[in-house]
Image (cartoon, rainbow, N blue to C red):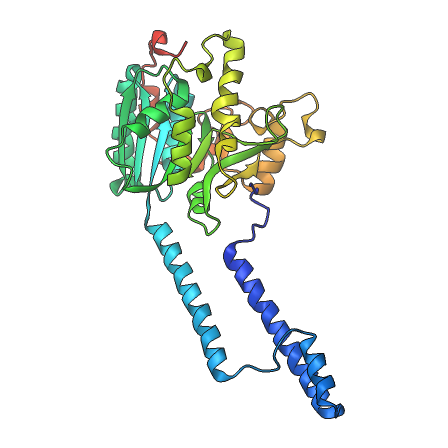
Length: 369
């Protein structure tokens, strides 16, 4: 049901190519047997028996060859048209953002520069208290980031009583029409973008027919053998419908764990809205993580078991070896400051004076409790 970035996924198309190669092998084996039999064996029945051991006629007439070639061409044309249809479907990105400080403003900016990719519409979903800051970021982005000359970007504001999942749900459920979009990306401002990255959409549009794609997969949680992290995810139409049913529930739903003390509430919410989500997908709806978020045993001793809190694994394996595109905002050992060189590729158009002039005030009463 899942495959990481460096794992080969055999697609339907590759499988068909393999079948045709096997047919060619059988055909030539039959031809060789026919020639051997014709030259050295006089008994025709023995020759026929040998050829039939390959379960293949010794030759095909021109009409059969033409029909096979026609079937192969038609199948390829159908696959090509399906690929074109996938590419034609528009994509929307929803970013849950709460600009508490400079790091969160810059993380949001870096995502706008480097993670939008081939999406045609971006919605920043935030709380009412953040409206002045978010609106100023929108003005700067439209003015300074070239791609937004052709990509629609807007913000929507809500009560924010259901954490990030509520901001995603409010924005998605407020769309004027789902029919316009074939792909839906959701992320939050808890990560810095390190480089241009369109991998989520690339995977959704691939012939693998993924319905659910996450930046990171994870393994061996006590609750599930495999799950997909929530920091950056994408869905096709089927995947979105499953996400909406699982997570877009009223704020008094038990999945928001109001009966838990704060220290246990976050884990409870993660279990339902993150770890359990992949289990809601049917077997024929593929779900995948592009990078392995699970830290190997030899690097996890005494440290956090996932990439989000394990700096050595993030730096040495994900970034250096696999060109991982993100860093956690809360980890100062990943990104020391908003001037850190590691995020420079995704802050090229950022006006530093603009960030310095922001007055960071927010109403703590508007945060989920």
